[in-house]
Image (cartoon, rainbow, N blue to C red):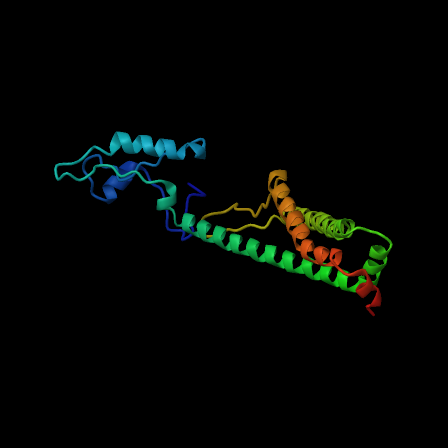
Length: 222
């Protein structure tokens, strides 16, 4: 009894080669497909090129190639699904970047507007525009640090909760498929750096506006 070999449709099966020949009324030895499983997926391009070089020149009496070499991406429908998911993930990332950019910029614009009088005061006592610019950029940077730290903790807790729940995806004869989300430090670090950079970038325009503000006009603002 075999278990765990069926596809999503539950239409796959495995029998002995002799039984298959009898069912299909094949007298000789005929093999329609040879599957090669690699220990390291990174070797796939090199192995594919080598097989194409060695087998591609073999032809039958009609001049047609005897062998066709295909990678799993071309044969499996899951590859196209995975590519579509990757595209959707990229779109979501772009949307999140836009949301972060607009949100931080809105917060900093409101911070500048609410502190016009304070900006005028510190400018009047001799604070240089560069220091005012640095103050608001530092505020944007701190907002990014707090936001990324909070988001990271929430994400790690959500991943731990999903792993503890042991959610399964069983279909057909396929069992034992668990939802096991994982994330590594190498995946977290670039995202954190990008969010912090975007936050500082979004703070630049309001900070520049605050630094260029006329002290007298700022002090008169009500």
